[in-house]
Image 1 (cartoon, rainbow, N blue to C red):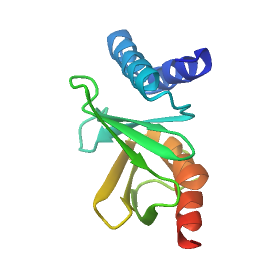
Image 2 (image 1 turned 30 degrees about the vertical axis):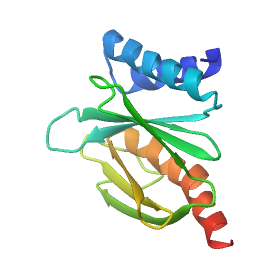
Image 3 (image 1 turned 120 degrees about the vertical axis):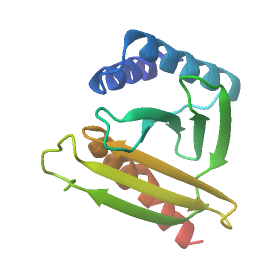
Image 4 (image 1 turned 90 degrees about the vertical axis):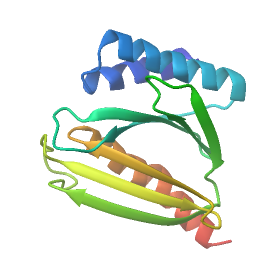
Length: 155
């Protein structure tokens, strides 16, 4: 893994209040996947299981490149990865938010869920965020998902 991606993963994990063990596990997962796929990923997102528990539990690890999205399911305890094409295949985005208004301060109660459908509905992805992670997911929607949806609609 490049130093820049590893550094950004470590900073992100620290922002979410993850333990050193969880952070190391996250870096190991990213390192493994980038080494076998040889794809230059530029975005990382950690999806959370949304509930009334604080803090929200970590669920899935997502890596994004301009063309691909990779998911490691239950990344702290599992090694199960999958890879999907995102470029020109995104056909639907659904957004649900609670106590989250982009551009305003997030709270522990803030929640954001984004569901995406790829291609002919055979593949989909759901991203969940709580608290400070909502702003990161919102940026991901604006900077990566929406541009791909627009590109998909123009083909």
